Amino acid sequence: MKKTSILNKLRSSGLRPTKQRVEIAKFLYSRDKTFHFTVESLGKYLAKKTTTKFALATIYNTVHAFKKAGHLSEVHLRGKNNTTYFDTNISNHHHFYDSQTSELIDINENEIKFDKIPKSPNGKTIKNIEVIINLKN
Amino acid sequence: MKKTSILNKLRSSGLRPTKQRVEIAKFLYSRDKTFHFTVESLGKYLAKKTTTKFALATIYNTVHAFKKAGHLSEVHLRGKNNTTYFDTNISNHHHFYDSQTSELIDINENEIKFDKIPKSPNGKTIKNIEVIINLKN
DNA sequence: GACATACTTTAGAACTATTATAAACTTTAA
DNA sequence: TTAAAGTTTATAATAGTTCTAAAGTATGTC
Image 1 (cartoon, chains in turn orange, blue, yellow, purple):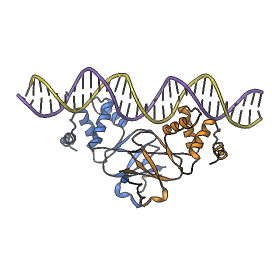
Image 2 (image 1 turned 90 degrees about the horizontal axis):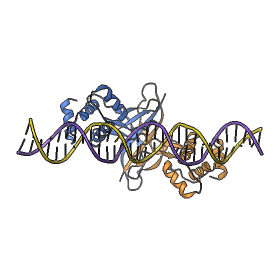
Image 3 (image 1 turned 135 degrees about the vertical axis):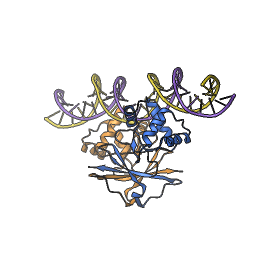
Image 4 (image 1 turned 180 degrees about the horizontal axis):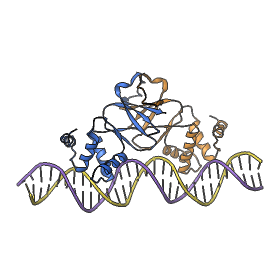
């Protein structure tokens, strides 16, 4: 993703392209494959690889702004480390989870098919289905 | 579940039947259906319905002891309230999750069938599969 | 039943992830 | 260039959970 398209992405979401946001967006979106991260891992990367200063609150704010704008999704998994995982893959999909390494791996939506699904309880409908396949060695 | 069987359950897990553990076990296992709870909801119940005093740490200790002994399972869902859900249903199964009420509802294992499942990544095997069906109104 | 031992409970401190606050700073559009 | 609105920052606050060390309790033995 080019710099201008990152700026557009921010601007079209109503986010002013500040130095911090641009750095974070470059890190998140200047790559071929989507990936998973935590606020902690993102912060470490930014501290190491950029000369910009990032308050922790800024990273949280920015990640939430991106999430709200639909550029990021949150994985509703409570892993053993108890941190929130974010995913630059915003399409419907599933995950492998390796609790030994706390690592998430994407599963495309079409790689899992259901033969049978229960009826949702009274008055409710299905918003979406999340499958976590827990791995062991 | 009778009182003696609760005592046996504790003892067979290497847990001394203290007043606190017996009260908690009675609450968790003296009923027909399994159910979900959080440490907070359990603590509130115990404060209201018993005359025994429970330090918060004791509730955590006891719940973890039951989990370790295999009498409870933990749901690996990160709900919006960010608390840990425990489940007295220790068999393999799945859940509906209503984010409006933060409520979990069990789905029996045989109510979900898969037609297609991806191969696990290199060297790993599947430990188990957890399905969360998110609900909306 | 009394005793020693090992296990438990307890209150409070500590810890971790996250969110709130309010002042200083930046971007924006006119 | 300037005022308004939005953003970053350091720090404090919060929430859930775990740790600690002292006081209390269950257990097996005599």
